[in-house]
Image (cartoon, rainbow, N blue to C red; front, side, top):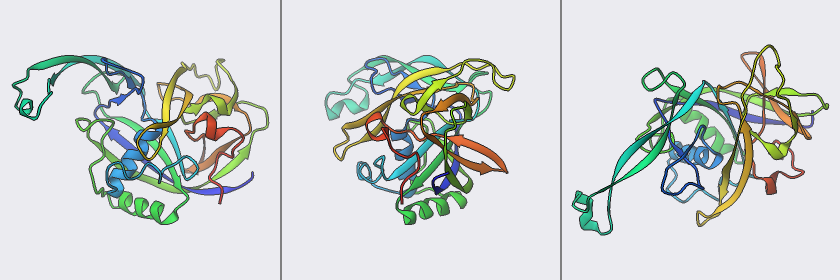
Length: 269
């Protein structure tokens, strides 16, 4: 082990979600989990930070973000009526409507079968910011209501714990990683049964950071297990490990390829 980092752990839960893919156009496709940029937006909302004011605050070298899928999910498509607005006077609906297909993330059993959930692992170089976020979560408070991608998908943020995450050097053997994994941090992935569990891996490309003008500054390819199981893989150099209810949890940060090359998985002090 090479270092430790105090990490805040909390759960986001809601009935459904829509995390729009940045490369989709007229059809609103959704990720099955919140990308790093979305998590930063949710944290900013809980803290009460002004819109478009926090992009530099949550740069990849300053904020650690990892995301775990807690339950099996699926995506369904529905057509949604949007107002056609070209001028302010069209806000009353007089401009007509246009129909747009939208993907929604719901529980695998379908709409109304329960809540979907994501576990967020968060740390920040500014400990006062992290402590303020932890206090709000412990008290069940948020300056602005959190939501899962869009305002129609309201969510709750539930404090889980604060734990010390240690950086563990990979020994060349595969381990079970609970979080969504950037592919460039992995040496290889195993598709064989591991612990008598079959796994289905999915791959996608997600945004990681914006610059101060909200232009995309970093992306990465990731792999994840949509049923919420761990990814069995051999990390290239190291991974973060913390204990929750006395059980080890291994995670990797969502970090772009440019930032992640040769870097430690934890924030350096």
